[in-house]
Image 1 (spheres, rainbow, N blue to C red):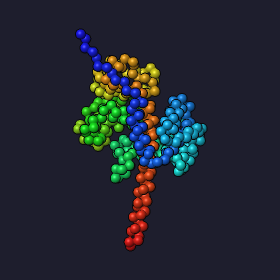
Image 2: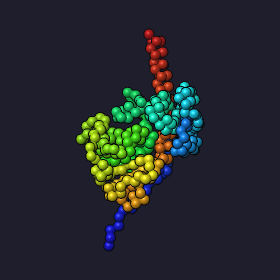
Image 3: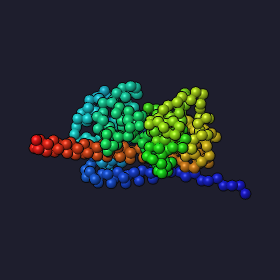
Image 4: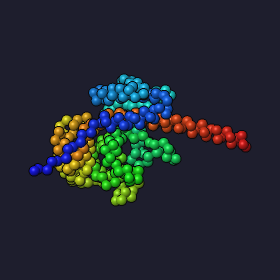
Length: 329
């Protein structure tokens, strides 16, 4: 009698998002007001509009205020600066691509760091690559991470790929992960975050393969990047117990024959990067992550609001200490 293959478990983003939404709702109850997120849409990309509509729907359903501002791209810079200076605005998101060049990177940097829900400001990006997890010396205010890479991490936590017995920051030790895509927005940050958490990560781009790792025994504080000359997916996929793909093309499919039996496969592209046969090889398959990404966006907004509240409390506390010192002297 032929031995039956174990069934692949298909995990939908909606089920993962529910647990994160409960966490967000609990945090929202503590601040007792509706945080305002302002979205700027200057892109003609249909995917950007869909993301904006999803954001608004998720905000309105979960106790957040959302305002979509459609602005001509030549006026966007001034519009962002106005929102930076508006005390009523808690968070800002800009739907990219807009110019499709370095001007988009410039726009990312003019966002007030205290309102940047996507974690694309220089301070947040620097902290992420340097494996600095907090904004303050007391390790109270967590740094903001980019939404899509963080959504993938939350999915891996949900799937128990992270080993919670190990110390925080080392919980992917022993895991080998391939990330197919090295964009500056998702692929490269994701590889860095996974490596900083202890994984051996193969970052695959159209031209080459790089290895992200913290060294043998995780001795290094942050990841290092090693070029792998001549390597392709043929080298990476058989070694990987987790494969994460985000190639933005409807024709690309991850080669099924190269996948390790029982691999965990996650698709973060708007297109399906895995063929329907994936269920014959993978142990777990996550076909899309969009709903988790939007909940992570709300989670980041909540963190920004909480950081602002904490900063106000700290400032008032210091002010009281200074007055007490003056009275005493």
